[in-house]
Length: 283
Image (cartoon, rainbow, N blue to C red; front, side, top):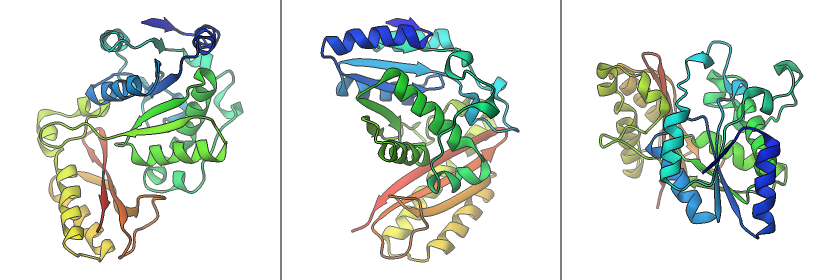
């Protein structure tokens, strides 16, 4: 596996692959890789001749009260995991390689509407940071396909909209969430959980599954189900930011009779903010 830190070195390698007629899949990450990330890399290997993984802790997507310095950085361990999967190239740029100017002077990419709901309410500016860095990475790597996890469902829709609106020649592939045996979605932030908090964390997915069964059974009062779900999370010792039943296509509040739904939740346990979702197709 090759590791590069500059756009110039990345583009030299990309040029060689293009001249050889080889396609490229990109897996953007912030590092601290777990089995969920590695599943994305495996899927990327199925979709293209070459696989590029980026590791970049993006300062633009952290808010004023979010401690970017505390985000775990495990580059040596990440490199070993990627080498074991025969990753072709690791792109691990420093901040100054990605952002040339002071944050207030940087060009930004905004995806209105989708970015302003759910996590966008509680993390203002977050999805602008995501959209900006993803757009930059697409321009740097120039992949034919990019692979993202469905655990960050809102992020996935934001990126799909970005690609559509800016006419970018990149196919976006979503990969199902990888979970622990008790249902907890894998996340880099799970490492923040104490043993006691970890025992409570599966309540998020259990609540989503419970609501899905209620809906499959004919329950149509989605706002009432949301209130019940929030109470269930609070009763399990979590501090929910939101729990909503939305249209899967655009995250607008779902109404009775719609067939493609997604139930999304975000909740705090100690200093860990956990998110999850469950897609639901009704007959």
